[in-house]
Amino acid sequence: MSYRVAVIGDLDTTTGMALAGATYAHVHATKDETLAKLKEFLASDEIGLILLTHRVAEELGFEFRQAMRAKRLLPLVLRIPDKTGYTPKVDELREVIRRTVGAEIMVKKEGE
Image (tube, rainbow, N blue to C red; front, side):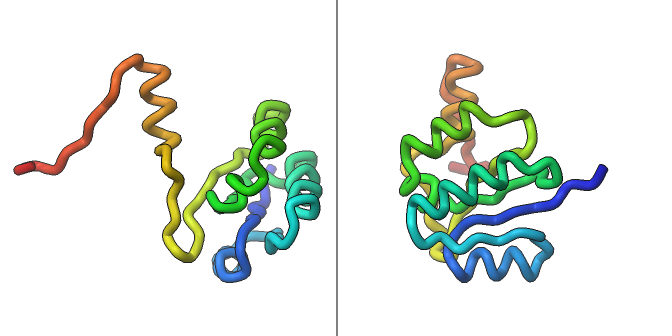
């Protein structure tokens, strides 16, 4: 079975992802509207990946985290930077590694 890609974010991000092949795109306007669309995407059997900008995820706050705890294995939800290159204050991948391994992993370039 082939799965579709959905994207939620600002106009420029969703337009770019739609041009790159995302099947579904939702431009974030209000929290309630975006939460409803996210829940619709999460319930869909044909969507395998949801791309969501960090800013939108932070604005959705508790409701977003609650939806992530209740979701099935698919679709995978991946938070991405928006058009400004914004990334969150906490690196999620580094935090998952720290909790799993129990140690901080530092990556440095050669010569530093």
